Length: 413
Image 1 (cartoon, rainbow, N blue to C red):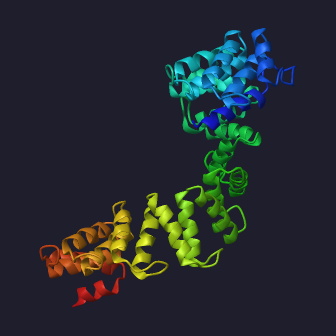
Image 2 (image 1 turned 90 degrees about the horizontal axis):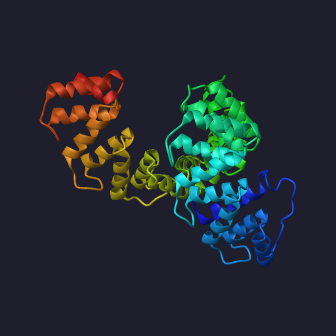
């Protein structure tokens, strides 16, 4: 948890949700350090929480999580639910103090007993994951249901997750959709995405690409990376929306810049083909590389092709071998074949028929026709493997049955 995130979380809990002790008083009881200290020392709970917030955020004071914890703890020990939640949150996140899920459970539980929805939701997540104690799905569901009844969208989301993935209860996608919809309509991004996925795949309901596109689009506009990618795919394919490659490219670009590897590859492909964007092989190579560096085998393969052909990149056969190898080792069949060809021809590396045979065989065993034909050649000629006419003809036959002309010819002669 980054420091800024903790501060934001604390601020949101303090200001974004209805709280028990401040429900009637909307304005801060104090604004300066001294006035807050005076009120806090006289027993004003809200002043204690404001002091905790000021120290956590470094607002008008030198930031100090130790002092923030002190003032939140003062409020918590006085029985204030907000103070208990804020103290529990510090233990939960472990920022500024040692992370302690057991203490987080303790203080969330105290606030939960006062029907604090935020505490109920966080306590439920601790029960779901067994953090700070034992796993208790029944208790988690009970707490989430209580929080959801109070309108907490996170609780609704977690209830959706429990039904969606069968966490402690039987899988029930209809119930998952019900809870996701409630959370999504309260603008909870994770539920918007999960709901879109269920509509996209037709899980738990009739497949509804229009609804999938709707919710992906809403989540994407709020910065959800996978939603940006998925709505990009829908625009590229014309699924749930009118096909629009320009819009697809815009969504891919947005997701690609945030590091989504498939978006990076798809964006590269659009630049490669000049679809939705002006054709630019250099830019295509840039995005293929970004995706390839994250381990996407298809992108690695395309980089290998570009280095082999000089399309968008200067011809560099050793670099092509490097990228083909990365993809081949991930069992990407076309790269296995192309890598075998490189070793077979001695292009980019010293000719190595044993390696060529090894990679042809890998591809051939996965039904890659050209590799099956080349396996036949190597067995017939005894290249990279002991000569074996019977094996050679068997591989020719596999390729010939799929209409490969060279294999058909070699069988005929």
